Amino acid sequence: MPLITVIVPVLNEEKLLLDTLVSIKSQSFRDYELIVVDNGSTDSSPQIAREYADRVVFESNRGYVSTVHKGITEASAEFYVSCDADTVYPSNWLERMIGNLTRRNVVAAYGPIAFREDGDTRRRIVSSLYILGDRFSLVSGVRLSSGANLGLQRDAYFKAGGYMINSKVASQDFLLVKGVRRYGRVVFDPRMVVYTSKRRYARAGSCRGALDAFRFWLDVALRRNKMTYDTYYDEKYYRDREKGQ
Image (cartoon, rainbow, N blue to C red; front, side, top):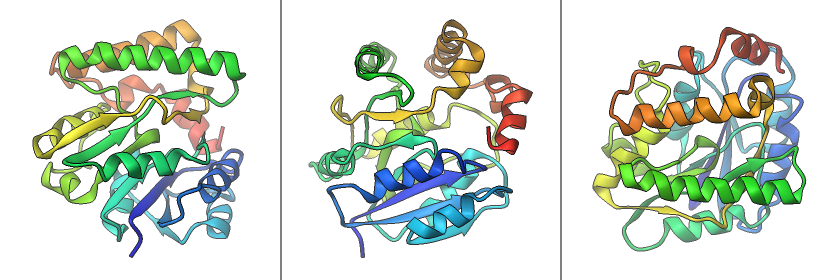
C-alpha cells in the first residue's frame, strides 16, 4: 500500500496534461500511487493518462468536486493530494507534502501557487503575494487553500463530510479545510510552490482575476457561501473547457 495517493482530475487537457504527469512522475518521493480521474474528456487526455497513471478511472457526474471525490474514494493510501491537470510540480514538492502530512496531529497541508507561463522573477512575486494573502486570510479563519496544491489525511476528509458533491458552491476547498480543522492541524508550507496555468486570469485580465479571487475568499470569510461555480466562472470558461482550451 502506498503512503500517499496523487489525484489528478481532468477534462480535455491534452495540451497541458503531459507536462503535469511528467512532473509528478519525476518526484523525488516515490512511495505513491497516481490516479487520474477523467470527467468525460473528448480529446486524447485519457490516452495520455494511461501512459503515466497507475489507474485511470471515470466520473460521469460533471464538475471538479465530483471528479476529485471519485479519486478519493478510489485511493488506497492513508493520505491523498489533489493536483490540477494544467499544473507543473517541482521534483521535491511531494517530498515536502508528505513531510508535512506526517507531522504530529496534522490533517491537511497546502502551499502557494504561481503561474507556469511566467519567468522566475514574476513567479517569486506571485508566490510572495500568495504567502502574504494566506497570512492575511488567517485573521478570518479561512485558509487560502487550493485544490491544485492540497494534501489531506483521507480519514479526516470523510470525518469532515468531504466535498458537497450535490452543491454548486464554488468555495469547497476553503470549506473542506475549515471542516478538517476539527480533527487536527492544518499546515501552510511557503516552500511548497506549484506552477499552474494563468489561462483564466489572462482571459479575465489580471485586475479582474484578482478581484474575483478576493470576492471568492470574502464569500467564505463572511460565511455567506453564495458564490457558485456558475457565478465565478462564466459560460465562455465552460465552453473553452469543453474544447480543451
